[in-house]
Length: 520
Image 1 (cartoon, rainbow, N blue to C red):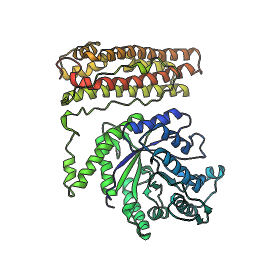
Image 2: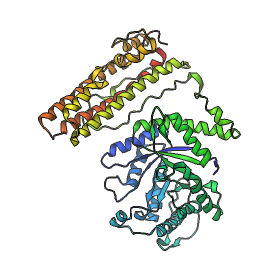
Image 3: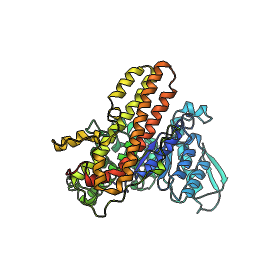
Image 4: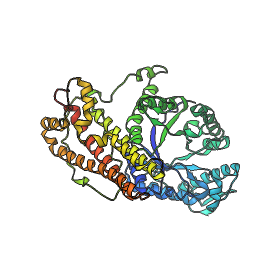
């Protein structure tokens, strides 16, 4: 398989959980905020635990401005082709050309039949998909004269009118794994969209599967390069490697670039509902994969990969190179301990400022410390579930909470940066309240922001205390988790909101002024 040179695109694959609709929409918006090109949702119309995918896509389309949307993939047996074609075209017109059509032949036939769909054999399902693609293309083809006539075994359209035409040439992307389906992709579709997790041998299976797509294209007189090769991927971001797509972002960059250059994959869609993973994928991995692939494509074979191994920073040393974490935008509690609209903003940085490596490290350290606190929040929520299940007692949960940084440090920035600064200087002691006074002295325009951050630190400390009180109350009233759930949800809302706000306001000043005088 050769790299056909398609532009690289990156997307998110979000679970359409009906129990958390606000979070689903917030994650979709986050995909747009971090620069991803596409957001997608699985489609199981027989699953009451999921939002209806087409309704969700329409809502998300109105809640976003740039990102493209697609089902991943839509369940054809429960979606009539003419209606589906007009739905896609309509939403594409309403969004200015932001909709693509991911399409599947169907699976889980018991559930499909229970919901009123027809049970089909594997062969018949492929034939039905073939006919449906013909119907959909006929509906969109408003340039041809006459009514639509497709006399298929599974879909008969006799005299339907054409239109509307979509705003742009909508891609039909098919999820396929078996030979007949793969040849159909090559013959009739615009993209092949499998999931890496469904390939037992991983990337090693891609050459043989790609060859079947190529075979179908050639048999139909099409150029195999016309079919975009796509891939749903999952994995984990970690400090050290634990396998394929399980390791630091730079490992992901190398491995995804390899999938492009060796197997022709040019669309990568991350299956994750974790805000931090989505952010890393959009802001760190995607740009570097594009840069590495562009370098390889522009250089004779063998010359670019070595050069690409040398670390570079777009724009040179003047770039800050540290990305504040977005607020996921999800609010689980009805309580609002502060008004986010009244938060002041830091003054803009000086134009043309050059950030040395030590300055960038100082800004990044704040993000790293916050990531530790985010991990502790995940532990708190996990503790709640364990207490509910009876596997952990409220007393043990209190003991675990007391050991966490968020309980011990009284929410002063100086305290949880003390260890880092001491390690760097080896002789500088750092008192709890030293960092904010240093920033106040260094930049008077930060005063309002620092005042607000200190106020929020006090609020969050109180929220942490409320979790502890709720655990005590649970001992008195076993089985009633209402107070504890509310306290943990409020902690989630306040902590994630505050950490994001703090990073957006003071990461850049820390990169110029450091945590203490003389650091930079």
